Figure 1 (cartoon, rainbow, N blue to C red):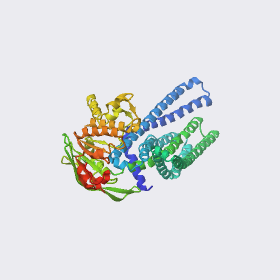
Figure 2 (figure 1 turned 180 degrees about the vertical axis):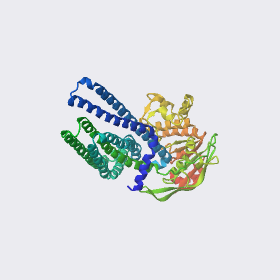
Figure 3 (figure 1 turned 90 degrees about the vertical axis):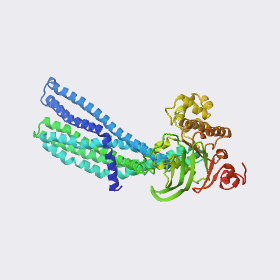
Figure 4 (figure 1 turned 120 degrees about the vertical axis):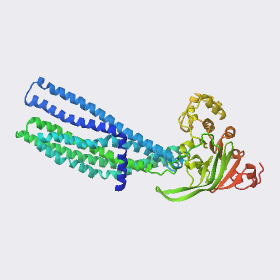
Length: 590
């Protein structure tokens, strides 16, 4: 990693400090109080031992000091507990903020971006990487302040008490962070590689789970298992490399700390033997010597948390730096009245071709697209695979912005309208609608959570889903699994249709609504679509004849351009592209 990249990542981590400034300040204050009370604890304990063992005083004499020790123990326990709690709160605040920023950015990038990503990579970044930077704020930042404050406070006590021990502490202390940096320097590159391998493993495993049915049917599950085992073994090896460096760093820290404490003990012992030092100050300094190095050793542990956070921040910053193709400065407004007309005006679109994360070229997808949608009018879009139908729908749904031409909504340029406001007026029914884990009611009310029961019942009836829902074990309160697990394809379609009727959208986009359904279910869906088309503008993307036969206009795409348009009867009679796509014989009069 270059110095500029490292500086950028460090700047990103520091930039989140204001989110957790208050809990960080409290955590540092609690750590400082705990360090100061440690000095008092060592002095009181030394006084008790000196009084009882050396001077032979009665136990009644030392009770005030013992009560003082108890008070110090309680105070340290309280401050340590509070410090740990607020430090965790600091990390949690940043984690939640980063996850929120990632989620917002992913939503802004839209489905056109997520389709090109591996779900496991994105999941690993949002959850694992964000969790790792939380430890940077909960552990590293407070410790970075305490590693300077506590040793200086102890030295302030040791210097007037025993200057020889103070010199030993001052000489040995810088060696610990020096070797910590020297040994830990290689950890940064290892952590970068570790995060890449973790993301790859997560993506690989997620893909395998998603495609488990296909793997089993093609008898490829054993090969995939071996591939996952190989990937996880590579991750295990890289983990051990990171741990090897971490243990080596810990060994160096413990070695220098132990040697330094031993030197202090030896010098204090000889000075006590030659009566150059009294027992009380000598014992107090000896008690404080290990505590002098404790913050330095803790800093060594937290330094690896910092390295891990830098590696995690690399993945987070890369995602957040992904440019959003949709303009965020959309200050236009939609009319409150129902939308009447939507028009494509010589719209063109070009996809960026990416290689290795960099744009390496462009691929034209659409050129000169010109057609109109109107309320109460159904337009069908047909064409061979790769003709540009999906791109048209993505432009209409607001997930892409035309590179040429424009789309107008009642005269307003769609590129100037806020995406959220526009999408609130749209409903979409894909070939495989998405139902989320929850109740049937939750899924129907997804876009209209405040819908009243009468409106809900009407939507269900319009979608002809009443008998379906009544037949479920708990009706609307029946729990369904992710992606509608437990329901058939036709049942999922009807619940999704009820959701669309409830949304009462101005524009409905249907993508192969009757595909993969039996004729009876497809007929039910077709009747619902007929009722729906009278109350909105509708665009139907389909290959099936029954889905486009009654459309007011059929637009035929090929290679990103419109090659034919008209009603079904006229297009079928021509026997050209439309007839070929729909599998019609030449000259059909239907």
